[in-house]
Image 1 (cartoon, helix red, strand yellow):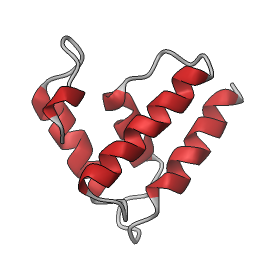
Image 2: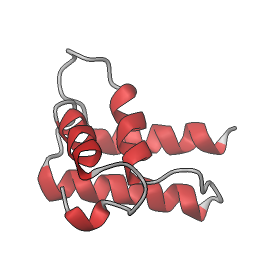
Image 3: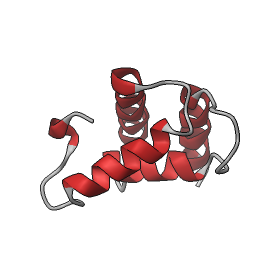
Length: 89
């Protein structure tokens, strides 16, 4: 995970690494592609006035949306569904 993604005061680097590894284990996208997807989801949320998220929470929420032990999923789809869910609140 890009260390620039770590925001001071919001989780530790280990928190980010763990969240990214957990999400990567459940997604088809990997590496920079997955990092870009997380950033895209965060950007869409912020564009729609949802400002209570950061990269760490997005990774955790996306990972929790995918049941453990299921085959890897396309996280672009999971991210899109998560944005839609958050917009509906």
